[in-house]
Structure formats: structure tokens, C-alpha cells
Image (spheres, rainbow, N blue to C red):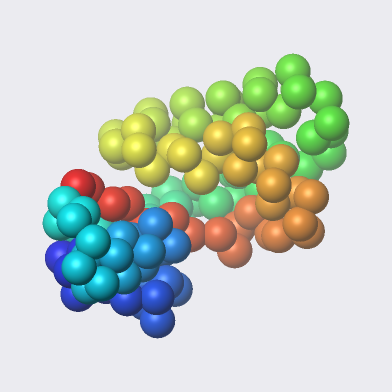
Length: 119
């Protein structure tokens, strides 16, 4: 879907970045248009080959305060995802920083979706 039609109300399926870019475009701020691949595409990919369960299991017991352990777990998850012939841009939900944030906020990793913005 074109970024020019995405608004903040669409954050659930378009993601925060796309919603904010759409708001800026609609406010007349000179932002390049592009498109967004919806969170449902990401969710469908993660569920079908069982990647969501793999990620959950891989993160069980990980000490997020141990940056080496966290980076290693994040790298392992990303490698498994990328091995499934998916764009590396979708691996970003399992960057160490994103994992750390979700753990600190008590957010279940399997409840997080990602939308991909192409601009």
C-alpha cells in the first residue's frame, strides 16, 4: 500500500514507521513516497514455517544483560529466518536492541509483528 494513504490509525497493520511517514506526506512535508508490506505478511511468514516458536524457544532463558549472549541469540535467530529465503530487512525484529527492549518492557516476542517500508 502506498505510504501516502497510510495514517496513524493504520499503525496496527502498517507499523509505526509507515504511519509516521504517511502522516508527514499528508501534512505536506517533502517526504519520498513509497509503499509498505503489511504486518500480516510478516506474521504469515513467521507462523507457517514455525519461526515464531523457534524464536520463542531460542530466547528462553537468555540473559539480556549479557550483551554477548544476547547478540549471539539474536544472530542465531536472524540466521534461521534468513535461511528461509526471506528478505534480510524482515530479520530486524530480532536485532539485539529490539530483543532487549521487548524483554525490558515485558513484551512477548511472538506478539510482535513488523511491517516493511520501501521508500
